[in-house]
Image (cartoon, rainbow, N blue to C red; front, side, top):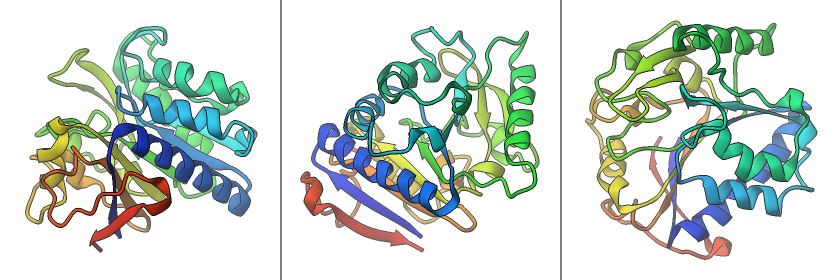
Length: 259
């Protein structure tokens, strides 16, 4: 099942998403004792992470939440482009999870391929004896439709065995490590968090019939037993048909797009 929720602006979107994510984390812990939560990178989620940390520092059992990343630029963790660095300053420093619960993608190996192997080994150990199913996986989307670091027409889009791969992409920085669809599509829930006018065409194409994964990689996100929800601001949703917009979190506008 795929649905969308649209808000007036990034601030109202971030506030509503933070509250909804906190509720999902609490529900997962209540149901299974722990929660596996995959964070996304880029600039868009910063405010949402800040609000998640500020509003839900005390009502989410962070000591039972295990934090992972969907992709990472191959830069040091204190680099301005680091996805881990973004989450550390906007979320982790606010909620202070136990260090053993935080699992950033390693970028200290001699090359990204070694880092990818190390992160896949970490995930295999984490899921040992059970299905590799994340409770909640966040994804952003770029104007070209790429998700995590799965870019249009890249061979990694068609990976069927590896969970984590190293990629070289036409972006700065080019060397990255990313999760692949075989793991993404086992998640219980995937939330796209997308804002801004530059994303409107990609959003419309991702939700339109007939678009291929090579054109818009977001099309490849289809969990086999989970749900996909698109959290959008008005600008990102501008080219979608029959969009209802309500920037007030108490009156979220949600419409189902496809099942």
